[in-house]
Figure 1 (spheres, helix red, strand yellow):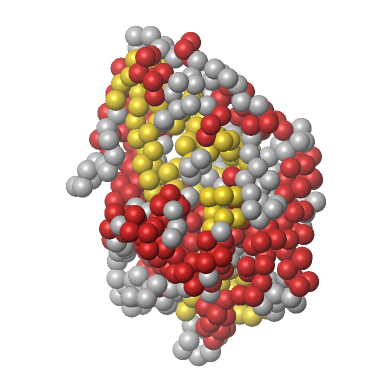
Figure 2: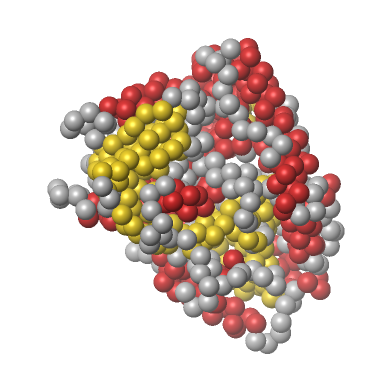
Length: 573
């Protein structure tokens, strides 16, 4: 099977097919609204059942919550303490599938230390939980990860020399997994397209089409051209995360799922700021704080606070940054300061609303509802269990269809780049010799593209100048910006610097020096005029400046006001 390319031509072909759905006998089986991990997972689930699927996203793929997570694929240790064993087991089973079959190129094992601070009772208490965690993660192929191990103070300091000696009496080392969340979504979209889905980003739903009580499609606006058109489908799946209330409100105010947004802020600091061979999980008065290895960086987070402001661009305030630094510095010999912070990002968790006033106590369970005929709503949940959420949503949608529909098979469908990944990894030195690209760079590409790395290296062979690294972001090759545009649906400079790569949070200048180069690489592919090219760079620089300013503000309201100083990109034609 040929690998699907989310090229500009593919997007146009998808839009053409979506528009044809209003013709008699041409309606889609399923239309998915929302291009995060659950929406793209739903599109893949439906497409692999043999259904004709369309999926649209208002902005870029994964531009909301699904690019701003903790980047973890995990069961959630704290849910064990809440006795939510079913949720933990479900997540751990999904972790095993992702590690071993679905996305081994994107999901990687990562060791963590759980520091112990209380004598006598804490070690057996935590150890019992770790035994249960390891056991719940067992599949017929094992867990794919080593089991936990108890460490005393000396072993803990050997693993993490930068920890204060008085910060713990020992630790338990255990394993979970991590993922580049935005790249995972890009892989889901491409895989769905490979199985026939029609996918278009930068397309907004402005209303739903009704015949009596039944939803029969949606009215849409192409954000790139401003044109509006209608799409008809037998069933519509609303997978819009924190925007669930707004999209449901277009149809009905009866029997709605209620979703509350919880803001999570993360800091990115260089790997050399403290010594450790493992990540950390630290208990706070509200929740937990993760210190996660991330290439040549650490990701530290998260916060968990109610958010009732603008959802498209949640802003991190000075208070959020201070909170994270204060808590991580409690265990470090050399405290981190603001000057150590390379990047900051904020995302919103879609939590099912309940009676609790605290977002930390709201459920991470997901719910699927059918509030009116023709419309299925899926909400809640966590990144790790996206596939289960998608399966449940498509199950509900197909239940209302007349014909017999095949059951979900996504537990056996590898994402693009996964097939043959381990064999290509074993050949990485040969790939490096053949392409003239250093083996360390080839390894970096393999962890991002898997077996599709050879497609990226083919660009380098055709245009050797694309082997040059990005200015200010040495980890990334210029070929990756080209590939993002020709194969991964990137439409704007922001898409490349923020989601197809992680330059916006990993580079000290947050991608400012790379932006003109990326614009020059994208311009001929997308047919940009000089005006559009200049506008793209100006927009990105304004966004970075607005984010920096927001992070100096004392509270959410002033931080949001600063962040909203940079408007969304509007194409210039």
